Amino acid sequence: MPKTNQITLSRNEFNNYVVNNGFVLVKTKKSNEGAETKSGILIGFNVNTNYAEGPGSHVADLAVITGEVVAVCDNIYFDREDVNDSMLWHTEIEVKVGDKVWFDYLESLNCTEILVDDDCYRVLPYQYLWVAKRGDKIIPLNGYCLVNLSKRKLFLILTFTTRSVITHVVL
Image (tube, rainbow, N blue to C red):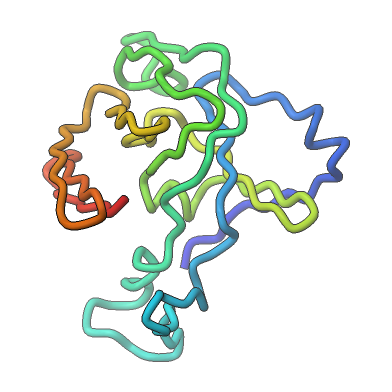
């Protein structure tokens, strides 16, 4: 299972935290482990069980992939010649503080977590944000998400494709 880099800050230290260029600070749940669905099913898996898919294969099922943006960087660095420090493509910053965002599960598991009192924040590279919701508006991010909206009963289903992986998110 990936190890998340955790930093514990006081509320005062956190209030002075500055987000680096190319990153976004997102308030999330600490973990989905042990969460309960509306029908009473507990989310989780037995870490001592050997699944056919191999060790760590169910970690993605528990990854936190949504949160609320609390801070946004000033700009994103892009330079085709600088592949180590540059974002891989040019894009504008489209998220705003208060947006609900969905992001890459692997990045969620490997990012830096900032713990402040009982709150959990994740420092995420902007390039791994997929889609944002601002009020009733759905905003595809980074130019690499295709979003198909369809209304089903009382909820909204987002279907988007990222690098040939199809994902469904229920809003």
